[in-house]
Image (tube, rainbow, N blue to C red; front, side):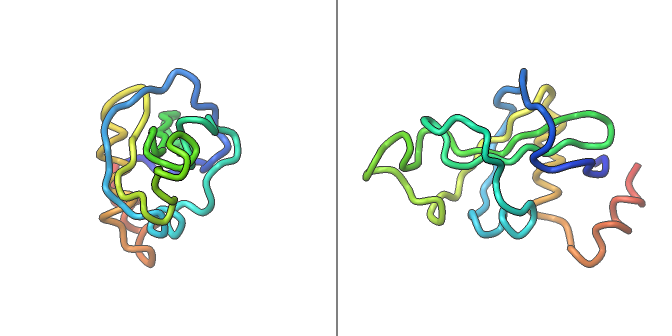
Length: 116
């Protein structure tokens, strides 16, 4: 996995669904900080944009399962456990999964340096 260059600063135009990840909202917050504030407020309730050092971009977002789309029948952010991963190539799915589920915060810099 390439190192992360930025979170919520890159343009995600042209990305599309590449895969999914299971994680709760609090885990995403702890790893990525708050979601960006420029996303589709109709079908999506939260989105993060991750730019990697190689220029690849990945997005993490919910799709049509939250309150923005379903109103009172939609899930609250704290209850959403399934998220979509967007990008321009499917390698970003493994990178996002590694970032969210396999990293050890204390050793992230060392771990990412060891990977090419």
